[in-house]
Length: 238
Image 1: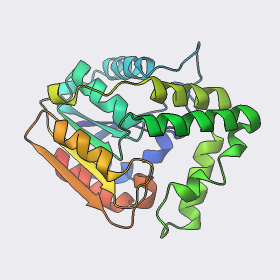
Image 2: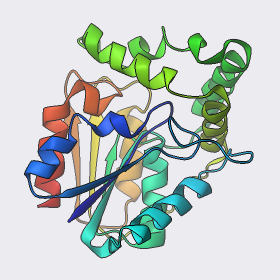
Image 3: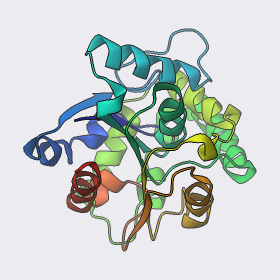
Image 4: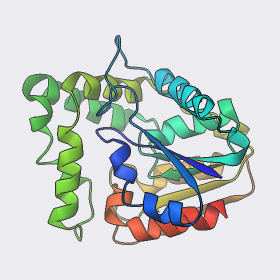
């Protein structure tokens, strides 16, 4: 089986680096992309739409001859809106969501404020707050430094375009997805809190679904709890 790994806002394929060795050891192939406008994938045109990211997933699996029926898609945060849309479009065998974004007005307002900060001061405006606010109090300075580095790998234009893409996103048609779901939420995730994930979980169209809550974990799952995430993914894909 192949595991397709889709990161979140202000992140990159490197976000999944802490869990990839575990997945490879279990016998899976991994495909991790830098989404359009993030890190090493430059923004082309205006951006501000998740459709480009979803198109790119299709292009990548087809270029690597990966049949979606033999692949599981994993989405973190913003990738948690992308993954269900990709699951609907390409018919992946299963979906794993890590602290997925559930489009809502409070988040849109927060992102609009963030856009204004980045327009004014670039990515520097965020590097001292997001690593701290986004993680559990028990997270380490090294974990927070990793997140800081991910943020500084973004261009302001790409980051703003992806903020807009989240603001413009509609709620995926979860009920139409009939394949299995694993939804993982950090008990201390304030960015994508459990009550929003519960809505996604309840609406999901397959009876084969599992909700796993990680104690002492904030929003940056693969950085804060790589062993637990690696084990959870392997167990689900098996």
